[in-house]
Image (cartoon, rainbow, N blue to C red):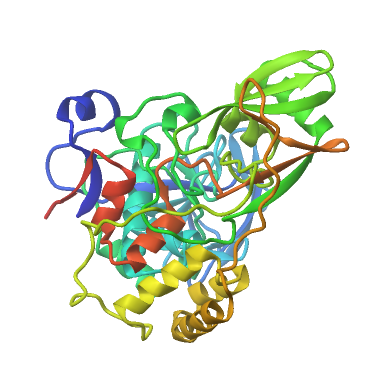
Length: 458
């Protein structure tokens, strides 16, 4: 059984890692799948059995509509005290999705799926990364996702649930998305009991973030680390245009001050990887500085994909000529997609050089069998072109006493950046690139969570 723990025993016991004795036991996760007040539920076979807060049982048939009014659940005109637990011989159904475990309807949480942690993870992996990913990347994601949900469950007692089913925690789509490969990744990493914080994100943009710069807390194994393998993702380079009025509202929400019309935005502090830490906003009525990560989540984290702003554009490049210590030997590497180890490395290098389009990269991830043909295509493009395809360089930004200014266009500001997410912990695209170059799941996690170790319990 595998999980992530801290090596420093004192630090682990006192602050962030909860220590348990004995063997690992089954553990349910409470996932909020709807925060509404009316739920149409059904079951794939048999009838739904309901138990209310007073222990009374009721047969609801194959489907039911349940509404919440105060601390009561209303079903076909009958009133029952909350919480209500729903289960039966088949899979539970809600909003077109099927779920293992049972449903729980509560006044605070809404509709929850109560499910064993391992079954929960089987519904997370295909939704977060997909079955086409390398097995070692899937195993790393499984360990990460398991550790994340167990740690979150220790901090959410006041909410009445452990996690939500969106990317506010980690995406969970129930039983209907399960695949044999992702289930295997979950089963091969079954958990133990010492738990570290394992935040993760989609794409670091070349360097992960120090958690202190993002959320203000200090955790030794969540400091920023550089990517060790080049890769290119659909969000390796992006731009976003945001109106000055929207930015003005965000700054007011963060600082409580109205600084008037925003005339300039300056990146006033960056971390060692180049990610913005603090930003200074200059308006017609004053100037305010705010944490870049807080500004991003306030203004719109889906539009402003990360705080790895790149005023000159372009993808990152890794200068790594050393032999990776975490590589699986070539003799042990399997080539289920028909590529040799050297060809896999060639694909990764060409990806970092920008030889392939975003559409082609997605196609390769979705259809690994096509990678052999894309490898040949890439070689042809290399021989045809004098230089690899690169993102067009943008003019250097105006420098100032703080750092550099965000480009202004009329009443809008134009942000250029790399990656997607808060940047803390494991980078999913970086993990995929490391796995394809031969790193094991354990070595991937040791890289992104320095100072932790992977332990096995029988």
